[in-house]
Length: 384
Ligand SMILES: NC(=O)c1ccc[n+]([C@@H]2O[C@H](COP(=O)([O-])OP(=O)(O)OC[C@H]3O[C@@H](n4cnc5c(N)ncnc54)[C@H](O)[C@@H]3O)[C@@H](O)[C@H]2O)c1
Ligand SMILES: [Zn+2]
Ligand SMILES: [Zn+2]
Image 1 (cartoon, rainbow, N blue to C red):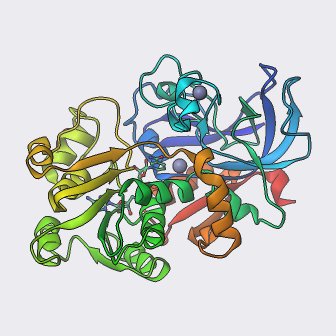
Image 2 (image 1 turned 30 degrees about the vertical axis):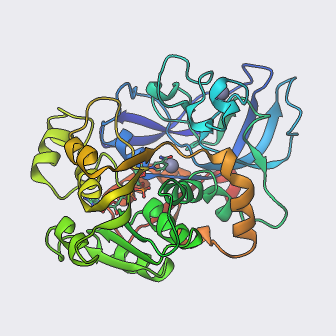
């Protein structure tokens, strides 16, 4: 089969690989119909995630047709069109029982943090990803869901990560009616967090990025205020100025380890790798939130240390909430929101590329070329 193949930082190509087979009675094999590239893939692409092995296939946001099922799979049958949440969850460990599907212990027993994730390095279990023609889906009775009748696969693929992550970013912010929510990062995740913040009762939503085309898109799509941090001066001073010196009630980090904006963070986090990425956006979030406020982190960082103003967290009495999104927990309500037109996820898809052009897809998304917000890869069989 055709599959994306990681060859080292900033080098990916399309290759032939063996088609996956059922390895366990609860496995399903899915023929991919849509597969997105995510900001999280860029951390892998940039070599920021430990134990990202040469030859692996990325891709944790995909939909596909069930081609084969193991003998214990009862919830799916051959021919079903499914959306597959990015978390690999067993459904029965202590963490899955608490609906912490992003922290499943059984799917990634060697780790103490994240559970298994498709195509996300051996730190996330070493599973092959969906930027391929076929993918093996473990625990097929637990998370994959048959597409609801009439749902566009372009909307469905966005429900595997972007919509739940944006929604959970807002949810973890504990937004109260009328709150000012400040979101760092106007990528798909930040844009979706902005849109969802209104659903929790925000009174004001402000999004910050450095790319004018994304700022304009976010302002339009999420009906929020949007600013370029290259224009507003120090974003922390800006946050104070625009909130009567109090700071935002809730700040969301939707950037993570590849943040720009601080030469020191970029040098130590991205170039020298002395910390697990550049923590510029998180730094700004902590310093921009009001005393007693909440900082919600969905931006991804590596497992090692990160340089943030922890003293300010203590002295301001900030609550920090963070996690990988728990996709399965959120799907029922988010499917309803999509069906009722409250969220229109496919509007974020700006680029549709054949799977064979995966290398161009990474370059366009990584370098933010051609006004790219979200690229989706389409394998040959889904283009017929
Ligand atoms: N927790 C989860 O479950 C989960 C799921 C999906 C994605 N993520 C993470 O969310 C983050 C965003 O993902 P994405 O797909 O939107 O990525 P993206 O790369 O498309 O967007 C990131 C945006 O941040 C902007 N940015 C860079 N530095 C900034 C700064 N200092 N302040 C404000 N904006 C800045 C960039 O210009 C870019 O537009 C990534 O870290 C990704 O790994 C987390
Ligand atoms: Zn993703
Ligand atoms: Zn589990």
